[in-house]
Length: 613
Image (tube, rainbow, N blue to C red; front, side):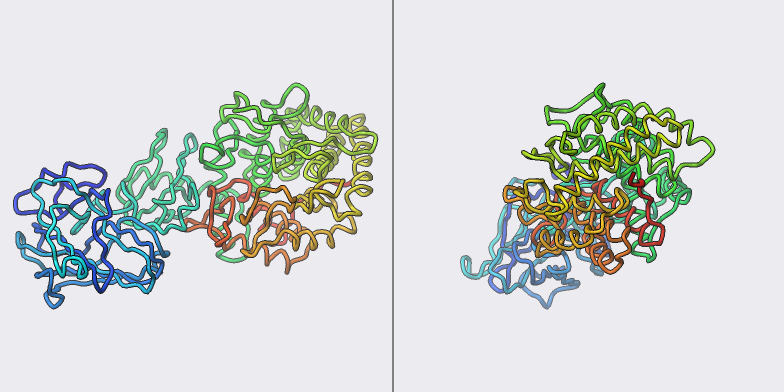
């Protein structure tokens, strides 16, 4: 392959003598290649004596069928083919577009003229086209369009098709330009993460196809066999040969970190999912303790709620430093009145907008602090808890003070980040968990007045939940006008000791929220915006609740669905669309944490639950 024909904008005019075997430009759908009336060919010469791979930029509206590439001596004569390879569209994931590489094996004469011939077959009435450029390309050879209906046969064109013969280095797809990407993959904004503990970079769906992580790391093996990673101190990834020393060093460090903790799961699939979730949560964790929800601009913020789950998952798997760092960030970003902003910029400088704050954080952060303490090394955990205790005190005092004469907190935006007119279970249940957790921590530190105060508040709130939510099956709001809510699972361990009537309510809530794709919407409020999209976190709430309650058959069924919806890199997406494909962003730290916690419970080591007082 000529060295000057490089993907992504190399000057196509600088062509070696007697060699035209690559063209990167692909802005226009030039020719249909659907049999039997259509095909296309590009004349080429090469300095190689053997060809093992050819590539063409193809877009297919058809999801089924096949595409065949041939190297021919005569463009019009199939019998002159010296190499042929057929690829099924279904094996590519269906309809899509991008560089399509065909492995072949052909001995050729350097400098001789050959033809790269493309033709596709499908029963669908959908286009399949070879893309290229209509611009003049100095030194290029003729391209040919076979259109039986229009031209009656072959017709020469000055336009040039996008192709490579024996592509090497960055000419291989998946490095600077995408391999063939099925349309279904583009439902997601991101597909994975690269990270070096100081910077993070998203792997876009177009570059996840055919790629895989190397071992227990965030180093990506590309379809070309080369590796992409984010070097230490860098903010932008690089592509390096396989076994590059810098990449190997990063892989070794990641695997040492995993080995220093535990990886839950009883099968290879489960342990692989847990390993990937842990690495992704680590890549989303910033040096200052901010835990990004995901790595796409609308998600590149730290939510106290999401961070609480991530801190708990880290603590439960032996990664104490990461868990404590998140809690320290919470302490620094707590507001003077004991509450938190809905989310903060990752540098901790404050909220990115005027989104209303949410009271549930006052429950989640003390609960996560309690979970960290229960898992922390005993030698110094009391001293470190003392450093966090002012945060816990301000949060729990605000929670207790928020309870009205009916024992319930006020209406506040819940984890949907939407307001409700009356108290919602997505706020009440976390506050109960947080008050019980804070009371227990106060007792551990000998803060008896705090313990008594928060115990009384927890009793008051627990009684009110039993009075107002329980008779309705723990719906979203106490007025019963906003349907069922997956936050009913927050009344189960490891958040709260389950009331006697909760198991039945969980079953009925799950059935009410179940979609045809097998996942759950967060709630079935008539005004809910979810549509046909299942949310992996809301679905995961039930896997965790049932695993913690010992209802293993239900837990496993839900867990298996969540595990099956990981993307091609093994990452958990935020949502799954109506067609059953990962969508929105992947990975989502909240779902990562839920998966780790659930796998730990199914392994026989459920997380502890703050005692109900």
